[in-house]
Length: 174
Image (tube, rainbow, N blue to C red; front, side, top):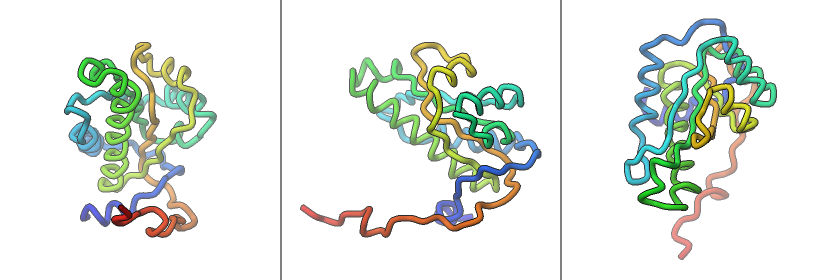
């Protein structure tokens, strides 16, 4: 599948089968996330892999009861690690670059999951402290996104509605 086919096929999947995520596919997804660009190449993020069903249920609860987290074969918790970039970038690194690095990694993981024939759904609505407790994150590691990944049980019932390109892209307005 070409890159552009992956981008067009990616959907937020909330209905997963009970099938496990194959290890080789997980490895390729994690590698894609790891290889993304980051500010100063400092890679100020961490990915926590959660597979245990009991822990996935706790994570779903911390994500305001979003059941797709518990139903997935696994979840990746993307965390910002600002200490990796604070020396070079000071407050901007802490407030912006660590978050951007983490978002880039999660974006690449969503696309890689699609390329692997799996589904995912970026979850940004969660209790930060509760997610941190579930994954036993140190105080300086900040959860930014939860990405349940699994074998798709069913596709969304309707097509994505996107704003027209002209509403999102400004060409040489200067």
